[in-house]
Image (cartoon, rainbow, N blue to C red; front, side, top):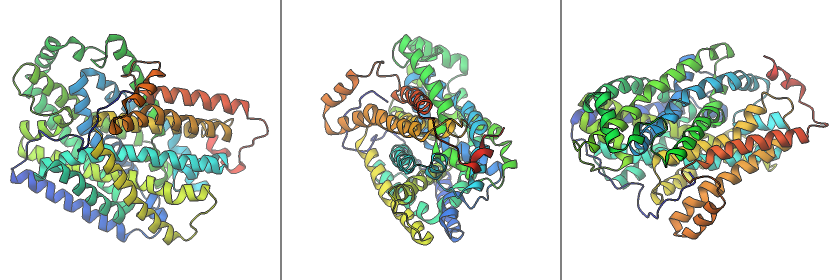
Length: 528
């Protein structure tokens, strides 16, 4: 997000999370962690090649594909960042959760068949492989790899920030130990299992989160005294909290934020590499048909956690029925621990632990592949031995994990804001290049290069630089950036970047179409 954050030299939040001293919750957490690690070992035993590690050898069926697609989008953002944003800004955040299901439908329509077909036509394992095949440009491949690696750091930070709270809630360890211990377990799990382990853990936790969301919704509405009482308490404190556009900024600003998030989380879904590369994994194209509604409905149900817990907790605080002994980032874990039964709390927290592990595994895999496979190939120095490439990919996981852990340690940005930043970074870089490129024969490599450069540059200037300025104490740098941002600081720069890069891509492609031909074997991609 384009707004600044303050200097922090400690983990993201220090903690008002109650510690679960219930053996049921502890048992759920320990059992789930053991299951996740066992799945990782099982995945390691089935991983012989880079194809196995990155795209499961094209072995995934409809339900598993749909569930893993929804769960990699929801994960730590949905349980920690979601309630946090709802608690902080009211109904503004619902423009994310009511919009994202539309994004699944759009993504399936414009990309599922094309990306799966591409995996048969050419040997593609990563998103950069796909963009190289489409544009026949090492520049496009290299810039795609760089954009993936940068976006992964922010996205992984979101999940590690959530992980430190969950580890604290379940096992009672300090937040700092939760961050570093969780990162270490994540690294071990990811290096073992690859994507095979990730998708099956995704499937397990997706089922658990859907069931748990129904229970949490019921508990939250009951805790708040029913939706009528919740709405009345919120309206008494601030009518904007339950207005159509929420309380993020003034009335006009909130409308702009709502529209921006609507664009970002519907259209932007098709630019998320951890989602769209799942289409490579499909066993065949016929099983793709029902994936979109399954993923969309599953996401909508799981979002009940963020919607109900965030509003209910804020309503009870405003009514004086609950002391605000926690930060906004802790609303989800605090509600589950304090206001649901032991079994539900154990189920939700354990499922979230698995969700964070499996989603982070997806990020680490695509980020490491960008470093070990995509960028070297773009530079003309590919690793030709598949076993060596696999080991280098696994080795790259460590660097990304350390870097993302550092982002969490030194940043005090809200988890939800970090999630929006990372989502927007990918959307701006890849919606034009991938969605337009695989649906429009007139797309050119020059258009792709221009869109990638503008998308990366825009997000670095308006998101990375303000975060870095906050950490280093160089507030003047953030002020200089905001001086050239034409919108209120609450309006996400990521959405503006998406619109700008789409316009740049179309304009440059139209100006450079002469003489460019689509490779003959790619023509089936454009058949309806």
